[in-house]
Length: 141
Image 1 (tube, rainbow, N blue to C red):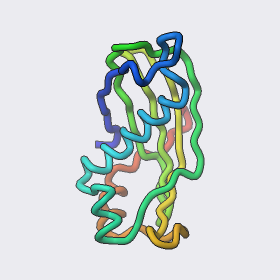
Image 2: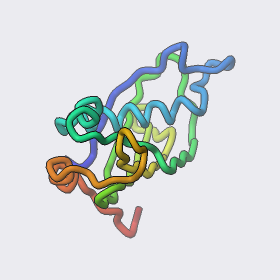
Image 3: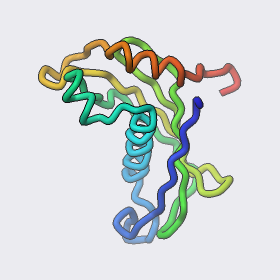
Image 4: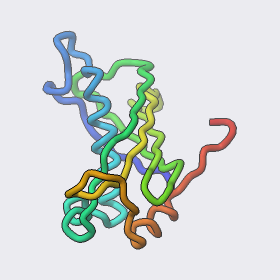
């Protein structure tokens, strides 16, 4: 499995005064999908902190908004690991309503020490699981 899909629904709290999903909430949807992807691989973020003393921080994020989501829309958030190093992950993500892509995005996530917040190497069991998920960017992407 290289692409993870997480379903969600738009709630009133996600929308602005016009009934459209507020732009920053799409980033929240993408964050939740990455967290659920990691959990699906068997690595709960709380356990990573307790067991290995690491946490993840977002270094860079981008979003290309193509169409709005509205109250009660059923969405799917796609998450795909496209680059991996000992300290960093790069993701490509989409948020879709049915077959329509609403947002294309990406993020760079860095592994840091929970106490120091300085970049550090990911533990080998985690690296092994992540290598299995890696989907390199193709020239057509």
